[in-house]
Image 1: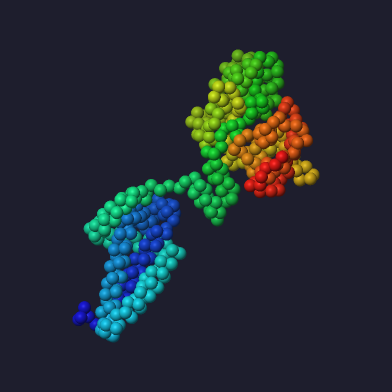
Image 2: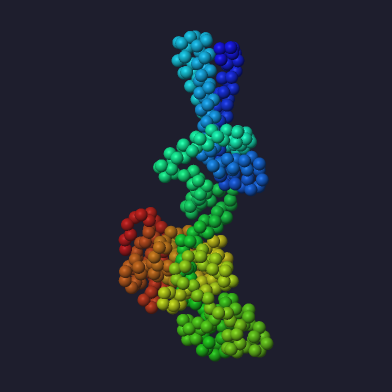
Amino acid sequence: MTDISIGSLSIILVLLILASACFSAAETAMMRLNQYRLRHLAHAGHRGAVYTSRLLARPDRLIGFILLGNNFVNILASSIATIIALRVSGEAGIAIAAGLLTIVLLIFGEVTPKTLAALHPERIAFPAAYIITPLLILFSPFVWIINTISNSLLKIIGVSPEDAASHQLSAEELRTVVNEAGAVIPRKHQHMLLNILDLEKARIEDIMIPRSEIVGIDLDHSEEEIVALLSSSRHTRLPLYREDINEITGIVHVRNALPLLGRGEFTKDALMRVAEEPYFIPEGTPLNTQLLNFQRQKRRIGLVVDEYGDIEGLVTLEDILEEIVGEFTTDVSGTDKFVHLQGDGSFLIDGSAHIRTLNRMMNWQLPTAGPKTVNGLITEHLESIPTAGVSLRIDGYTIEIMSIADNAVKTARILPRTAPPAEARSQ
């Protein structure tokens, strides 16, 4: 070093500071990259993304190399700055050089390049990957020694570098990603994606048609009555049973039954021959599971049974799909059958209306953890058979029982929420 001029040492010092800035920027850019965009670009064949993905597959080796290089150039820069200070000002200049070098490295070697890399990670990371990849191979023995020591220390505290590739998004984290993708995903599509995530939280009984509302064909009725039902039915598939819905014998598609009428071949036996075997769904099945089951079984309709094998309700593929995309139609099977807007801003609600359907269509937040219908919600809250004229508040919604039929709420009037759900419930 004694034979090198101060000018040459100064040039080397500047180059070392630039190298420090490059190492700092590369480290921040690599760690700041959007992993999902990186995978997309890598799958699309972007060479910079491919190299970067390979480097990030083992972050311990990448960080080990970057820190090895960064510390080396910083220490070498400190040594050269000390030599320059001794030549210029003697021993008194060493402290001044240390202070100045610290400020210069902090500004030009750390803060500025790291800020730039954090703001534009792809512009820094992808070109850096072309340089780091061969250098990492060249200095792999040194990196291996450093990583072996550091990984051994990590294992002592229960951390393994191999765990880096196993981290996956949880459902709630994925929900946050979808919510924050407003500029990329249309709002309607966001709702659909969030509804898909919610499928696993809902059970089949949350959306099923209750047993009392199932429309089917009683084979004990006369053929004239059965033909009249087939001709006027608004449903495409109807259960076949004898006397009681629990005695179900099949599911008939109206499309297969009507040709029998046209050919004059309609009989109960002929109707049974074109019917399908009934498909049963255990109570408590999550909606996402049942959606897959419908797909595997090539079915569109199923009967929900409880632990004793008794039929509790009926659910169709369309019912599950409506949980994702919303109502397909606005006919009498929709909410307009159950909800009637009043002049004072309140709503008359049928007691058999499903709470989940009301929440989705009316943008309400009635509790869904317990009972599935308005009648069940009111009865559970009162802990007694409801009577007309009683008013109560549930999660901020004022509910007035308007009429009772067969010990159940026939009609209720609901006012929009006027208080937060945290407020104490009162009758």
